[in-house]
Length: 174
Image (tube, rainbow, N blue to C red; front, side, top):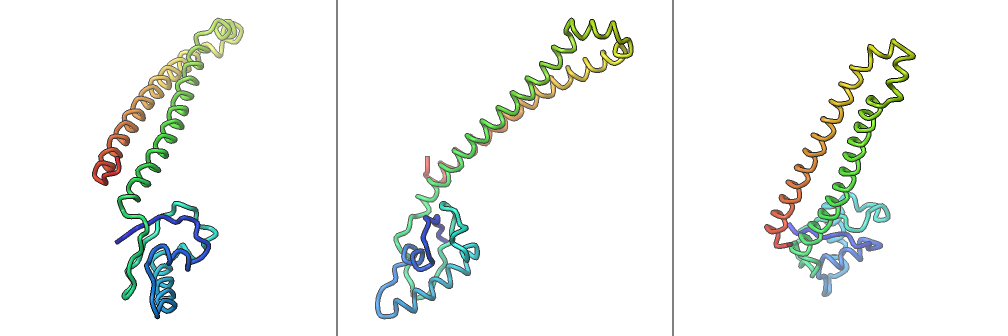
């Protein structure tokens, strides 16, 4: 099975011309046959206007029609790996921002619990005094959890990057 990417063709005829080498006396009939096969293999192409460029497409086997010179799986492998690297980079940045934010919030809460202002407030409102140790304990636990989660996410991302490089090597798409 061959797979290519959608490149913004305006209609199925353009797409069929890229996917297949259709020539000769029966070109019209073979083109209609190819277009029908393309739609059957890729039902999401019914409304080409809603298909984003880069969408993966299956090049169906059409009896009597030769495949065209559309990009090979090798090219697709390179494109796919490049897109995955880009997506992973974006995910890494978002996850790191989120983890940093969680750690910062936990650190701020911990600092607030230890602050002179809160201790002065506790003196004025004794009912807070009984809750403060529990708040401090929960704050410390939240900080530990946030740091642990940040570390686990970093390890998971490193493993994903390693796995992606293994896939790239298998595809010859380094």
